[in-house]
Image 1: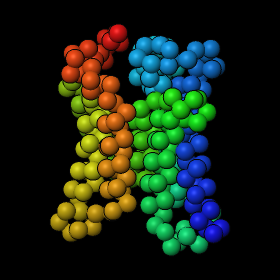
Image 2 (image 1 turned 180 degrees about the horizontal axis):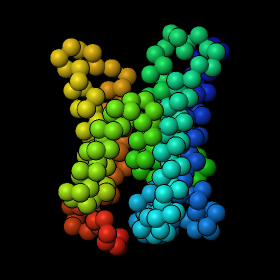
Image 3 (image 1 turned 45 degrees about the horizontal axis):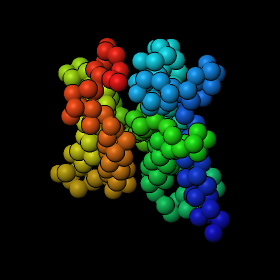
Image 4 (image 1 turned 90 degrees about the horizontal axis):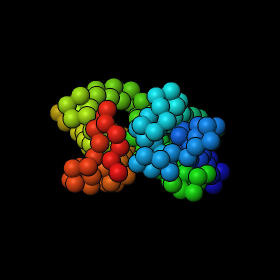
Length: 214
């Protein structure tokens, strides 16, 4: 039971780490709540549009960092025998996913958070750096082509499972834990960006360099 408790503790801590929203923590220092500004989203893009690039950089650094830390926690050996019995990669994926959930629904901020893209990237960066680099390249390419941050984030997340599966298609060495993590992240990111997709259909979604849609 102690071993199970350690794993559950890691998952809870992952969620609590995710709940430390960068924009809301920085906003308290600045005396602002960006959930009342711009698009109302507590994420890096809205922070950039409403407060400025210095504020946004700090926000993204915190949000990426907590994803890295949560996934690292999954890899960490805290003295539980399950660490050897249960795949550390699976624990890292689970803790990383909990951090993304915490970012979207933060316990410290009334369960009103961001959309999870930066925190998910941080978790992927710790779990599979090669995948993070591939997804970053995909995201940047989509930004250059369409200049829609939300759409680029959704399409990159949806590409994640394909990027995970592709290298192992020939030899069958696809990591089930990593693939499940990628699929879960893709579903969650698509859900949290549903308002962006709705604005895309309505033709009101702002591009980078233009003011936020009403």
